[in-house]
Length: 141
Image 1 (cartoon, rainbow, N blue to C red):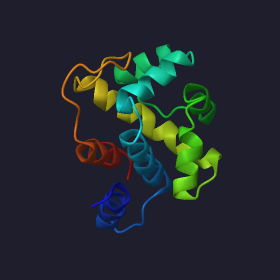
Image 2: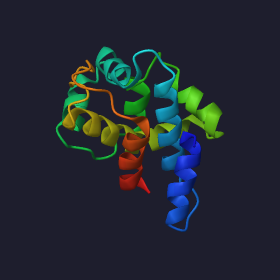
Image 3: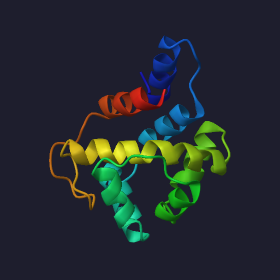
């Protein structure tokens, strides 16, 4: 089962179709699976783009949604936003809004479970993407 199929299945269990935030989360997870650096690379991009303080807040549990411009700044130069927009058929603005919900939850999950440190360096075994996706989607859907 692919990531987007998993999102549809989880959303369907609640009697709804996949939400835009769920689609963006799935697109992000799929994107990270296929990129060098993966999950740690996401955190490193935020640090390199001047958002290290925000990553520390998310890692410590402050997971309020981020503003779309914070996603744009943190992911500048990565091409992730445009790639997810193309995969999902959503506008880049919608993708940034969805990522503003998903990224804080994802970073908190990875840091709090010891998979990466707040700089993005791997500190433990890399999680199975399906379990991370289910955890994040459980809080979004």
